[in-house]
Image (cartoon, rainbow, N blue to C red):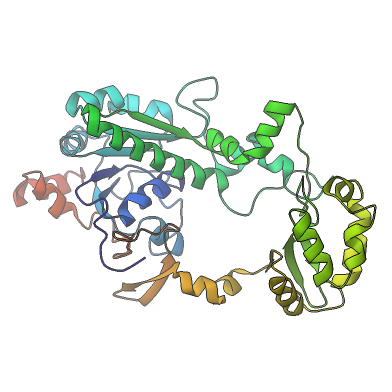
Length: 396
């Protein structure tokens, strides 16, 4: 990821009506790859939920909304709504994560926008879907984690439901919406028409359950909490060492034999209780006890070195500061520096996908709300006096 603007999606214009996390995550993909993303937000004091993600200058807002231009528009005011619709005329995509009925009340549902611009793509991200019995419910990440099954398999057996430490449903819903937009843009090249792209936290969370969900749908098996153990493979999970913790992952029989040799217990490889995956799973608890005694003899560094030499998957368990101190993480460059006029150089989280010719870029931080009002409204043909009047009327 570079600091030179990406040309990958140059020429695309995205109108970003989103807030909180799922919607901004979606729009960030397009902003980082060079699209003109215009963050449309209410003037100060109009939105009762402003500040949901903390201070505008804070880490979360800057990480979610970098590389965007910003305009303030009061969509509840007739003039503000009219200006938004003029912006739709030349836009490619509108992204929103209101409750499903809000866009209908405002008159900016897909059919409304399609009448203005038949090529427009509307992406709607909701908590539970655009229709159905839960369509009006407010959606939050942890609610979707619980309803989508994640909290039912996370944590130690018998511990009770445990949420994941990150916003899995929010982030994945935003990424799925971005994929849907890219598909719709590709299809538009053939048909010339836009379409309505929909994603929800609940759908995204269920999709992220992947093999756990498929296990139930295909075989009728309800997965349970497994703690740090893999549900179908062992030994795979967390091992305590002489000075901390590491992860190990032992897959097929070849890795099992290499693992036993590496830890100095070659007889385990052919022990009748552990000589195949089925037996290892059946005797998981006794195997864990034997391995616990072995791993307590050496430090994490020593074990990781030995297992790497044996080509057995293993890795450290880091706190966040240790993550970004790791040499491989530094080599990947996912902590991207960007200049802040007041605070100097900041680092934000880069895109985790690399393109050889047109990589993503991080060029600007989130500016003050409405910093591009004059610039963007001038592009619509408004003069200085008209813009000044809109400002006085609190339309912008």
